[in-house]
Length: 166
Ligand code: SF4
Image 1 (cartoon, rainbow, N blue to C red):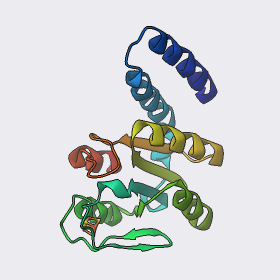
Image 2 (tube, helix red, strand yellow; image 1 turned 180 degrees about the horizontal axis):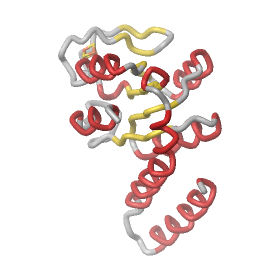
Image 3 (cartoon, rainbow, N blue to C red; image 1 turned 180 degrees about the vertical axis):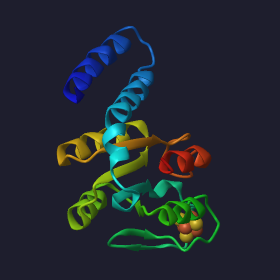
């Protein structure tokens, strides 16, 4: 079904572009569809076997967290919104990683073999991440940023906390 979605998505995007319309809604729908398909499998996995990957652009530009081989080591300094949801998710059983790029994600997945993934990012990153997880046979949910970009991005933390609590 995911292959059909990808083919359909490219076709619809071409039509949007030809007519000069904003095609971002197609990405949005595509991520929702992928999440819908993956959700059942994701919920079957215990939280202790689920990993969360958070993009580093959500950090404060003054983040004191050091880069380690497994991403940014957050010290919950309270300068951005990540610290509290990180603790909340970890208390639920999740492993939580703040990563600078997809190479970190691939390395961590290879090393620790999670059974399900939650990935946060812009629509494009999420789509690529969901396709990657599909190739690894991992049920994954994508959670989009509410404000994308390279720095000072934003997310609805309340919705995020609700999503990881399922
Ligand atoms: S809360 Fe964590 S991620 Fe955010 S700025 Fe502080 S150390 Fe960095």
